[in-house]
Length: 198
Image (tube, rainbow, N blue to C red; front, top):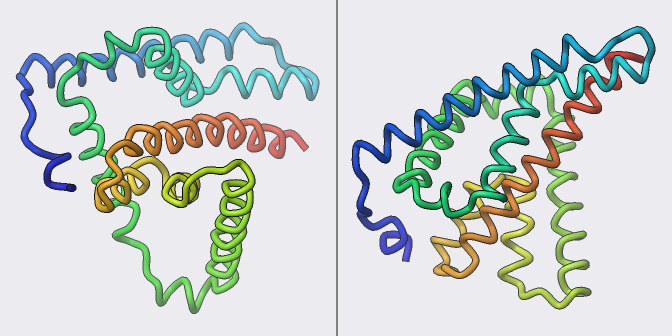
């Protein structure tokens, strides 16, 4: 099933160039908008400092512009052949680069409470997902993929759906993970700015 999903697809040099160019344009526009808002929004009190830090953040602008393009121009974005493959490949490189310096021995010796904390988060996430999923009559496959998307993001959820042959759930699992990234970006930047100002 996984091999069938990742079978060879038609992609041209134009598709690759267009996808990469579009990502550079989104980053450039986001930096310009965030820089402009960061300069225009005044600071001086807690509320204004919070809004300035929130709207003047380039990463939130990247998230927002990408989400708006995908939402309001789905045909335009969907017609970029190879975007999913290139994006997945780059996300896997990102995950490898983050994972390479990680050491289980260091975590166990230097920060065992961190491992315990993440374990508790995973268990609570699974319990809440199973209880609410059954309450709202979702299938076990949908619940497990939603929980996976919560914990590991869209790439691990999609990989699980592909490996299990749940092809109809690949798209929704990717969207659930991306939606989590969007919410997490907004809440994370907000909380970071909020705590910085305290």
